[in-house]
Length: 298
Length: 307
Image 1 (spheres, each protein chain N blue to C red):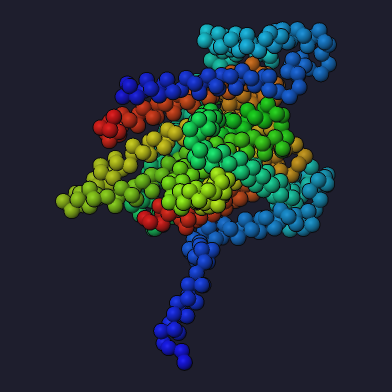
Image 2 (cartoon, rainbow over the protein chains, first blue to last red):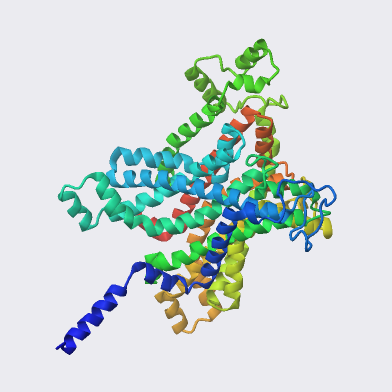
């Protein structure tokens, strides 16, 4: 016969088993309406970026000289550009370029910055000094100027834009991770792992790195928005993607000569950049509200 | 304060030296032969060697750096490869317009950003707050080059209120400064809001209200004044954002400033101008950060006491 206490215990255990950090996170995150909406938008954009070439109503590279600079209509939802190319199709295909450039630049910066930050914070001493002073030097150039300098050095092109945006992201990630590492390494469990003979790599990877993840997630999201702005800005300045590519910054740049007569050529790619960056910033804000312990406590 | 300033200046020196090395190495880091790049594809071997000699690239690298630093100290920044003019003379005409543009942007962005932040904080979770924060998050997300083009279309082309570009009196500064300041304004608004919300919960605010002070006095004299120090510091530290942004904004508005000069020089591979412009931007950024840091210690009585 089961006693009432056993039943109660099993119910408690069931409840405990049900608890998961991911569920807890989702419960808080779904209350952030703007961030949730922004996540859906970015999710759809990623799908569009992947299947873009298959769903684009027109060939984004095919000129149509009978339809130059046509305004938005049922046949061309976002109008056509100066070569008669369908802007909507170019935006769809361009989503892949914009997302790929920003994602790869930020993730490369994240990997490099995290490694440097972990080493700097964990080992301290001269390694810390060298890494942090190098970051200070990179910080002495404003972000976009540093990117411009790197592209000026390496030459224009989408790959060089990725390298430039990655390099200006590295010091920010390194400084953030270093700070979190300094905090985390004071924990007793780190000391315990060290005294049990765990290797530096194991301590860093298994015990310290997980402590930096929530801050990194927030920062990466915000940084993707900045990267999209920087990459499209470089393309706008003629330092990024080549003129025929359907990259959003390039589309905006080539359309500006027609601003007075056919403003949709400039407005449409601008809306695409604006909404995407806005969505990433809103997700970043939402994640910060949910994940940042300081805000949580307040 | 003087001790702190002196210490900060001393700390700046190694960073400045590294920056000077980086800008010096700029021409050496270009993939390929820089003399060949400058001389052009069709140049003869003799032409290339002449360019190499003119740029001093035929000397040992250490000697080149020492010469570069000596020239820097005397304000000799070399000669532009495209115009043949001394780089320093080109900077003289370009620097001030850029500086005016940056300060004007900073001024309006700080004033409006503060106002939006305060209104949002005192109306927390009401429509002025939502409106203020939507404006702020949009300002951060909007690409400067797009905003600039939209402003030109509306205020210059359709309404004819301001010039579409160039520099012809004060009116030429209005649209570029609105474009350049939008991002900073948004950051200041967000920061002011959170800083005010924190201050409004402090005990001295409750005391102020309890002793019957008018709400206006509580907000302006007590809460805002307290938040102002950190807000002004944050605003100052965002100066780099303006320097970077100025390159894009000056290009959109064909504004004859340092940013436009940099982009034109990159297009024409005018390396002496690129090198010196980058050095000047970095120096300006470091100097502003130093001024902001020192000002912070002057403004914040707590730090004065600590020191």
